[in-house]
Structures are given as structure tokens and as C-alpha cells.
Length: 463
Image 1: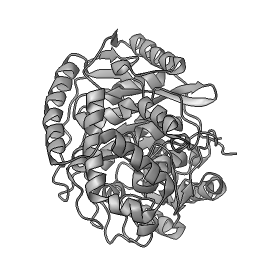
Image 2: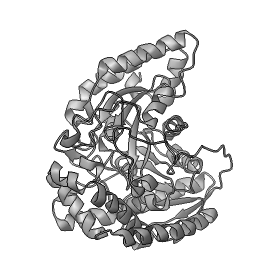
Image 3: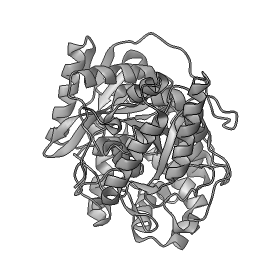
Image 4: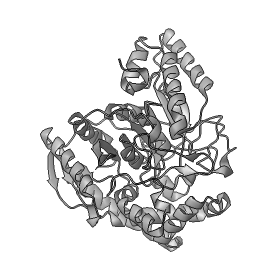
């Protein structure tokens, strides 16, 4: 018999809405799972079981009054510690912010609550949400529940580990250079980076972010099924007037079934195992009626360079002092390497990057008009060993190069979806789908067909 904590978000919502399960039962089951496995993996770094249980009791009472709590009716969700949740510290993995308590929910948290989601914990991130690994001096290191020797990804590594281990059915993540897509890949999950503006964002606990983050940073869901990703995305993307970048979700039904297969975008090194996963996903799509052509696309390296400029301008101008004061060795090492890659980003450099971005977006939009789905690597390698990026400058360079598509996508403003496809050499593997702006529906349709031709994602038992 399937345990409650093994159920999909869609099934939980249906069972709770039909009152075959109560939200209290569902929440209790996931809190018990958290208690059982979290000490091993350190995915959830703040627990508040009574707060979660009270939310569940209120949802059951609303159902008793004949009210519909929303699409996430009773679904356990975790929130990453870099967004505001009322009454809890928005630490972003920093000792400097351990007492930085939010006084109101961010829009994405408010939307999850309005949709009936039950928040069961807050998940770990590297300091400053700066790495593809998840470790900091405040909360410690998160382990991958599928293989403790490899990274759970970053910066939403706590989220991915929690979802993979059955602590929650849906996890909230953020992404400015792969922080949803890579943890999903590393933990054998699906993860959606929406188009900027699709999911409203704002932290009242801090000043508004600078232009790089305003253009590139997003929130989105990680889950164990494409259906759950779609369900959570619909809930997260409800309107909120606090975000001036918010764009309403259009109702679109046409799904052009044309795919551009890019095995090694811009000549990036790609391992044989990753190539095999891409070719397998292409075969699954062809069998489902998609046209798949192996072609070259617009530049990825130019987009990655623009991302580095916009992101490092943000950090160099607004956070360099905090990096020094936090004095976390790993963050300082990574910040130094990334600053070296981007160079000293002055006003002229920033303006030129913004100018080049417009032309590059135009080139990608034209290409995606012909091929509405790009099938490409999430990473050039299988998930990395723990802490590989800080072992040496050469190791960091290897990681940085393998993450080319992670770094490139945010600069062109398109959505991306990681789809888990299986394992290779004892490590999760998957593929990335890229689509036109505001057409997450096309990516989800392709993701469903890839998923349907594979095996269901199994919850990990951490050891």
C-alpha cells in the first residue's frame, strides 16, 4: 500500500478535497517522514510542526464549510530560506541574517497558501544562494538522499533533497543560474524555471534587488511528476500586485511539436552518459509524435557571459561587503572565481551587456519560432562529487564549463524544464527543455511525453 508521503501532489489534493483523507492526516504523515529522514540529509533547516498542523486543521475546517481551498488542497510544500515567510528568518544561508525575520509572506508563499498548500518546513541553500552545491556555515551541508557522495545541487539543494526524500510533495526553489534546474537534475526530479514575471516575487524584508536579479531571478517548483510541476506552477503564478514585473498567464492551447536537439550547445564538452540521455529523450519524443531535428542554435556562451556580467554586477555592487563580513570560505572562493570570469563590471560594461541581451533575445525568439522546444543538456556531466567546485581553481573551472546551459538561459529570459530520465553510473541523469517566453505549457507537454515513456520517480531512502 502506498504511504501518504509517497503520494503525488495531484493525488493528495484530490483525496483531501474528496475528504477521503484529511489535511491533518497528510501533514502528520509528512512531518513524521521529515522527522525520520531529515537528520540524515539536512534538507529542512527550520521546522515548525505546530504551525503546519494548525494550517491543516484550518483547511479541513474550510472543507467542512463547503469551501474549496484551492488546487494545492492539503499538499505539503517546503519553502527555500531565501524568500520571505512571515514569522521566519530569511537567512539566505547567512549567519549575518539568522535573525532577519520577515513580517509578511512573499508573493509566491502567499500564493501557495491561497492555493491550499501546507508549508511543512524551510529548506537549505548555500550562502548567498551562490553555488551548485548546498553548504553554509549557518545551517550546515545538505546531502543528496539518492547518493550522499554527490551534490544535491544548488542553490535549491535543500528543496530537491526534501522532495526526493518524500518530506514534501512539492518544493519551492529559485533560479538565477540553474538553481532549480540543477538540483532537480542532481536529485532525480523534475524542476521548472518559469519565464521571468510568471511567478510574482518580492521580499519585503530587504530592499528591491538590482537590475540583474530583476531580469533573471525566478521562483518555481520541483516535484516528482510533471503533473505536480504543472499543478504547483499554476498555484505559484497567481497574480500579486506587489511585483511590477508580473505578467498574467495566458490561456494557450496550441502545442507545436517541433524539437531542436542540441547535444553539445556551443561546443561545450558533454559526457557520453549525458549524450545517451539526450538521445533517449529524443527517441521518446519521436515515438510520441514530435519532430526532432539535430541542429545548432543561437549562442549559449554569449548568453552565459551576459548572465555573469548582470549577476556579478549585482553581487559586486550590492553584496561584496556582506561576502567579506560573512567570511564563509567557500562563498568567498566561488565569488572570487566568478568575479574573475566576469571581470570588474563597471557602468559601461553593464550597459553594453544589457544592449547585447536585447539582440540575443531577438535571435533566440526567432529560432524558437521554428523550434518551440530545445532539447539540450542540463549539465555537461553527471552530478558532481560533493564540494568539487571549491577543491581547486581547476575543479571550479570544470564545474563552471559543465554548467554552460544553466548560466546561459536566464540571460535570454526563456523558461527551462529539467526532466529526470533515469540513472547512469549510480547517479541521476536527465535532460533540459527550453521554450519560448511564456510557453511553459509546451515544455510541460514535451516533459509529460518523455516522462510517460520512462519509469516513475521513486522516493529515495537516505542512508
